[in-house]
Length: 117
Image (cartoon, rainbow, N blue to C red; front, top):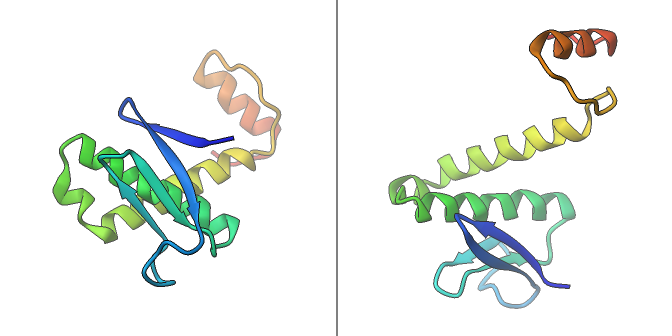
């Protein structure tokens, strides 16, 4: 099964590469014309997730015309890490998934789960 991610309406194939990188320090790469994201297969699953998000951020910024931000590795790393941690929080929410129709219900749901908001 091929893994894919859609970036700004363009499907990108995700490839795990074990021998295709010039060195072990290169974790990932996005190739825009063929729409491929390559990830270094020597990484842990956690690093692979963050690296994939990192390459998707590059793709989004480039496709939206923010080339200066896409070329800023510190910005891309920070944003990718923030996105990754936001989704980890979502997976770790200690309350059951329920539909909430308003902010009052949300606060009550959080309160019942003994969460500070």
